[in-house]
Length: 150
Image (tube, rainbow, N blue to C red; front, side, top):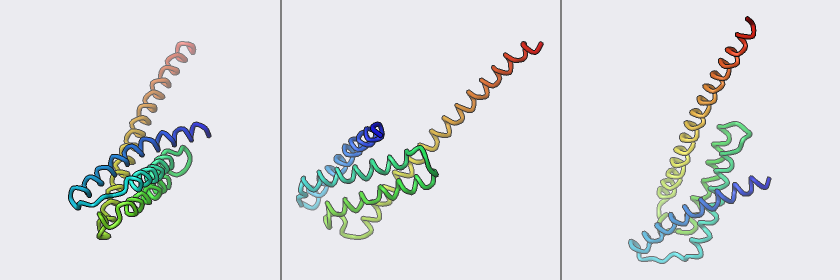
């Protein structure tokens, strides 16, 4: 239990750094292009809440138990409220049209899909490596037993 909380906090801190940088870039864009100010307090809390959703998504995805497809879908659904937090922070400054919300949500889904694919490739590579090790160990055991039979 303690280790899972520590892992969640590590994931949250990395997510918070990334969301803070993303939100800072969006604030700079809004300031330069639209000459509007966004409250730093809203940006701070929005980054913190979005990081909680992101860390929860990663934690759901990385669970040891459960069906892989269900874990992937739960992780994606846990990540999507971060888009609505962004809508709440930046309001009509960026999200004037519903299509902007859809584009940001699609961007998050695309990034999540890339992460899932990379994780699946790494897991497959590790599985192949472990299977090769098992085959070599089996051959070693069989070669050790053969001289004993003679």
